[in-house]
Length: 220
Length: 220
DNA sequence: ATCATCTTGTTGTTTTTCCAACATACTTTT
DNA sequence: AAAAGTATGTTGGAAAAACAACAAGATGAT
Image (cartoon, rainbow over all chains, first blue to last red; front, side):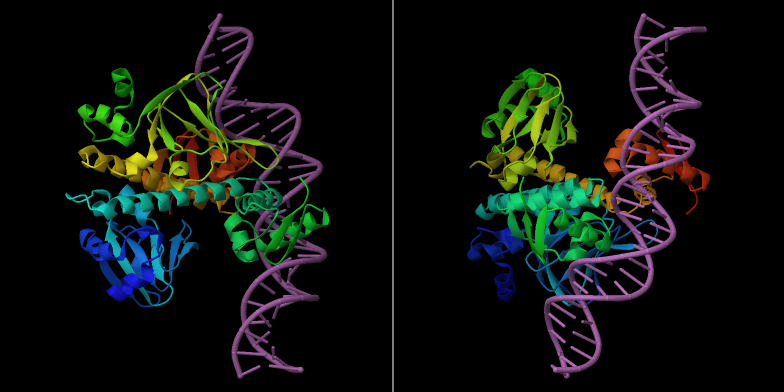
């Protein structure tokens, strides 16, 4: 158990919580560790979520099937990240599955216990709530930004919206992006090849320069 | 002040909190009420947010300007709703403005105070945190659903994704939607007239029936 | 260095969307 | 009931995206 805690000690969820407090936290939040084999289901569509997860090791995938049965990947969960917290708090049946991409180990924490501090109002509870609010709010801001990009009508505008947001975030006209072309196309909801073509056009028009993951927005 | 509290007493933020506790809550969370004239700015881009808002009366608009200076409306805030909470918790400078659409009255609450219960761990604090987590998580789920619709490549698929989600939520193949055509087109990020045409096509293909805001998904 | 694999860019065709303009239907006001 | 205003549907041409197939470049393993 100590070993497990070591692996997640700089997770955003337990940021600024003393290592000594972690094990009492586990008790308080009814922490349970479960292991999954590659391809095993961690959470299933339609099954109530009372505990959210914190990935200790491995890699998970959140997937959803649409009305035609097409699979789409909503996100990839890496160690130290939490997942399913939104569904745990809205008390709504999830419409997605969580699958283990490789053998994985997950710590489940009781969402109710987290938001209702125990009688003695343990000091770490405060911090946990703060951290959780930060994480969820942050997801919120990121989702809103993604929508801002996707709402544009043309691929060109989607690209420029994404790139200027990135430029603002990194506080420079030159920056590296975290996505490869396919991932960026998926993020913006467009076709990769069409997006590549659009990038070339923008380069020819002198609006931007790029090379692999490096971009530079020119002028205005 | 009592009058003000009366107006927001069934807001989701203070759900299940006794009326007697409300005024002590206001003190604890450093509640401040401000009034705005029509068209006045409530919050401005780039200015740090330490308190989030709860609209008491009036109507607000959250707007954003893109890299070309085009204005887009992110959302409309009605009385009893909270706003700017995500930015308050991520400690990030907001990239949007909040404008008063009509004369409005806003209660601002200190986000830090909310997440760090006071020493005596007032009972309502627990509930407030729970409510806030619910509200933010809920927004999260809604944003994710919107992205699920917008990520589809064609207007037809966007429509069907939206309509099947609606059908699932309302647990029936027949249902009413809350948007008029223009609002639905904005939500999905497509052209209204093209969307109308697509709806007609779906009707002709026998995939759905509709009349004004009433829809019925046929067969599978 | 060679080969296989993966990523990115290019091009031409088909499909879809946008856009603008107008037609029709429904609402509200007078 | 007529008029004005608003919401929705229809259409055709122009623009853009999707799609498919392939080319070129980069990466990694043997």
